[in-house]
Image (tube, rainbow, N blue to C red; front, top):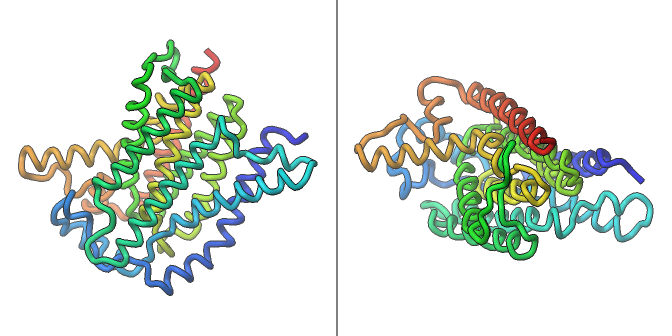
Length: 354
């Protein structure tokens, strides 16, 4: 019988190796297909004209392939399938390494797949059309439906009716856990717009998922910890090729898959395991939280006052516009995410003890 730590470490290490091995092949395919945007700029329906952003990113946006997120979810799924097959083919220690199960990981993996497919369609349309992919309304509808279905599953199938509160009694929501689940999923998805600088999203997401692997491990949810660590390791493999100058961008197929899966993992590490995974989510995913808030502030400010609050939103582009180098923004975001993750992990583990 292998240890719980090995049950997390071995699949995570495998995912990283698979990602590193697959990356050159994926990069070759994407470059041969010229899988980059044909027109630089943000979604004009949401942001309007973005001359500052275009000036900063115009060249790279139309010469660097999108769809790099395939490497992330592809490595996760290959790893999960590999250990699932081995677990059913050999009777030695392999069954204990299979982290796919109904109670802990079905939903995160399901959400990863749905996000990957929807994002892939959006990216495909983005690179084959000159005016964007799926509309924002359609993407939000997909995310909202996934959130409602997952919320219903947690409520009806797993009996989850409350969220954990650090150092206090759980907050009972009853059936309202379903729309609340959808709201959290939409909020985290909105934070996926943090993608846009080489290495930024990859580093931030890898740290967030590794933090949740620590929370799940501390709660005794070894399969969930392994799943989260596998996602983190696959993201690190992507990051290896995404640091400046990026070989490819994560784009929607990566960010949608990661944000949907993150919401599922946060709820799975909550009252289902006597934890507070949802309450610490805004802290652990602080860069995503700030991204959503600054985006909402920018849009609202423009509607009310007819001028910008920030030079560009989300705010990481604002820092870039005032003179910070892309590398400085990225690395400072990594530092902030690590510190927020340490604090969030500490709160989650101490809350469980108390």
